[in-house]
Image (cartoon, rainbow, N blue to C red):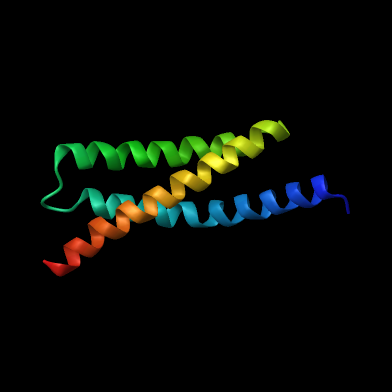
Amino acid sequence: MDDARRQRLSLARELITWGKNLPWLIKRIDDALELPNLSLVQENDMQSMAEGLLYSFRAAADDNYGHLLAATDRLREEITAAEATLHQLLERRSMV
C-alpha cells in the first residue's frame, strides 16, 4: 500500500470515529447552553462552535483529496477547541 492510500485510509478512519462521536459532542454543547450563568457571548460562542463542527465535518466528507486534508485539519482544530471549552464550562458548573 502506498503512502497516499495509507493516509487516505487513516483520514477515513478518523472521520468515521468523529462521525460516531459528533452527536455526543453536540449534546455536550447543548448541556453547556443550559448553564444558568452563561453569558450571551458564551452562548453565541457555543452555537458558533456547534455550527463550525457540523460545517467542518460536512466539508471533510468532500471527494476532493486536497480539500479533505484541509477540512480534516480544520475539524481536528474545531473538536479540540470545543472539547477544551466545554470541559472548562462544565467543570466550573460541577464546582458550584
